[in-house]
Amino acid sequence: MAGTADGGQDGRRAEAGGSGEAAEVRRFWERLGIPGLVDVHTHFMPERVLRKVWEYFDTNGPLIGGLQWPITYRKAESERAALLREFGVRAFTSMLYPHKPGMAAWLNGWAADFARRTPDCLHTATLFPEPGVETYVREAVEAGARVFKAHVQVGDYDPADELLQPAWGLLAEAGIPVVIHCGSGPAPGKHTGPEPVARVLARHPRLRLIVAHLGMPEYEEFLDLAERYGQVRLDTTMAFTDFTEGFMPFPRHALPRCAALGDRILLGSDFPNIPYPYLHQLRALERLDLGEEWLRAVCHDNAAHLFALRNA
Image (cartoon, rainbow, N blue to C red):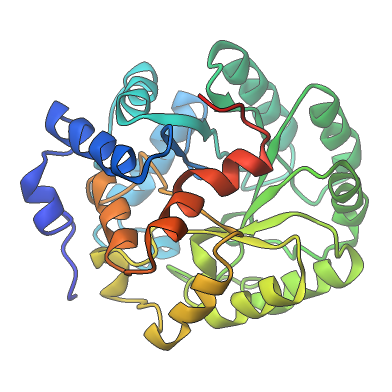
C-alpha cells in the first residue's frame, strides 16, 4: 500500500489528539477565514455498539476489505466530543446505523438524547427497510432530527426497497439530508454501487442525499448523479488521504468535476474511526490545489448553509 496509516508528514508533525494537532487544525481554518469546521460524518453511538464496531475494525473484518485499520481516536465519548471542539468543529453528527431489523428506532432514541446533551451535534437519526420504518422516521423528524444516516453496505439492503419508499418521500418533502454509504468501498456489498441509488433518485429527485466517501470507489458514477440531480451532495470522508489513495485512488482527471461541484461537496472525516490524524484529511483536501474558495465552501460554508447554522 502506497499510503501510510499515520498520515505521513501530517502524522509526524502533530501527534493525533494532542494539543499540537488541535493547534494545527485551528490554524488551517483560521487561515481560510472561516469560523471553524462543519463535519457531516462523525460517529457517536451507544458505547456498547461502538465497541463492537471497534472490535470489528480490530479483526480486519471483510466489510473493511481485510485492511489493517487502527482506530486513532479510541477515547471516551466525552473526550471525543471535547476533542472535536478543540479542533474548532462547530457542528458534527452522530452517524449511527442498524445492521438488522428492530435496531433503528432504539438507535434513534439514543441519538435524540445525545443531541439534547450535546448542543453542537446535529440531531442524527437512521432507518432500515422494515415494517414501521415510516412511523419511526416521522417520529424522529418531529423530534427535531436534522440529518439521517443510511448504511447500505453494513445493513446489506437495497436502498430502493419498497419498504423504504414512504420514508424517502417523507425525508424529501421535509428537506432533511441523508448521509448514505452506498459506494462499494472499502469492500462491495450486494446492494452497493450507483445503480440502486439511481433508482431511489428517479422516484425521489428532491431527496437530499449526501453520498459518503465521495462514492468510493465509484467516484465518477456518483459525480454523474450529483450532476444530474441538484439536491445530491457528496462528503469527503477519507477521500484523497494517503490511506485511501493506496487502494482506491481518486481519478485525477475527475478533479475538475469536484471543483465544479464545489457548492455541493461537504467535509466528512469518519472521526473517530480513522487510521490517521484528523489533520491529515484537511491536508489531503488542501493539496488538491482547488483554491481557498473551494476549501472554505467544503470545510464550512456548504454545510453551514445546508443546516442553516448561524455565523459564529
